[in-house]
Image 1 (cartoon, rainbow, N blue to C red):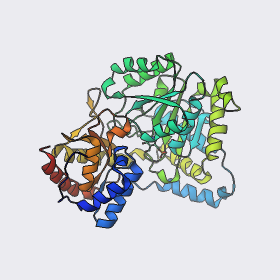
Image 2 (spheres, protein in one colour):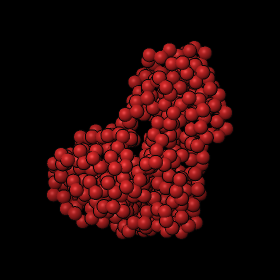
Image 3 (cartoon, helix red, strand yellow):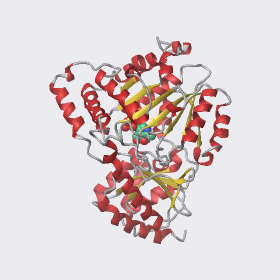
Image 4 (cartoon, rainbow, N blue to C red):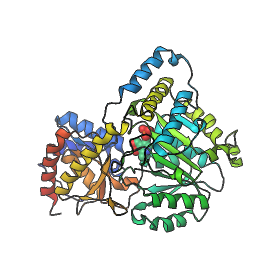
Length: 444
Ligand SMILES: Cc1ncc(COP(=O)(O)O)c(C=O)c1O
């Protein structure tokens, strides 16, 4: 690192330096969240100082009792002794289908609604089948910035990948860029998250339509990652059956896979539950090239009964009952799940102000002409520093984050901040540490 760090930082210089070196600064540059967390755990243990932990997207809210009680009842009824159906228990499939209608305004039959071991498992299965359905199409296109883990998955699966930072191609400009990326015919699927991890940008309806139109034209399946379902708090998506609804590609095309996570919107990360929704058309279309790897040429069969079955053997039985009851309560209007997570937006608003008051800039700041929502993540930069330097230096000030460069962002000067683990009582400490940081680095 080029920047000189002062020795009188809030967290003992030698201890931070020791752990950064043990775990290799390269892991900070790569945004390896598990290793950054390990560095911070060690520093906290050795110094007794608590960090402002913004590195990992871990939900920080207690889940609803509804799911917990339903799981307990299911376990008492001996579901632990029986294999779960790999495509999901009927009550869960029905509630997912109702959820799709009530919160996305999309008609999907329960047959096309499948639980997965977290949405990450859903993306694994989706990449695997979409990347193998046509031997001419072996590449996954990421609309970046994105979740680095998805890229690792695609790499592990042996597919090619392409990406572009959407920031320079918002609105109508997206059309030209996507057309350029799709013109060679090698793209099997497009993946993006909406709201977006790490930037919290949200695609406009115009942009979703552009993606859908081009995907249709070039025979590309869209994998829409709705891990942060209904968490664009600028709009109220919390009332079942009442507009506005969570925006989705499903309104514009018929070859898509939607991934919804139990982890963030429902604070149910520990039980590893996600939802995969397949469009009706994809369940019927035959892809003969799948037979190179599967005994089924029907995509839904290859996805559910081969990929998901052979990788996880199904989602554990009790959580299927737990999540079915959570969704039922949400669908019936008895559990306002969005209200439980609004706190992330409230925290982001205050934290962004603390950062900008101390000389930081919000890197991704607009959706069209509208300021982006306050939510689970935000992005900041500090003049004169690259994101990997900034992430590393902030450790000496007791603040952890990841550099944006690790997410496919061209804004190499930025870092991603996750608000979930930061407690409101820590805001004065964040302010104090950033005051000092800004005093030390403003001249840079
Ligand atoms: C964009 C995105 N997709 C998927 C996931 C994985 O979610 P899950 O916990 O359901 O596997 C995450 C988790 O952080 C995420 O940020």
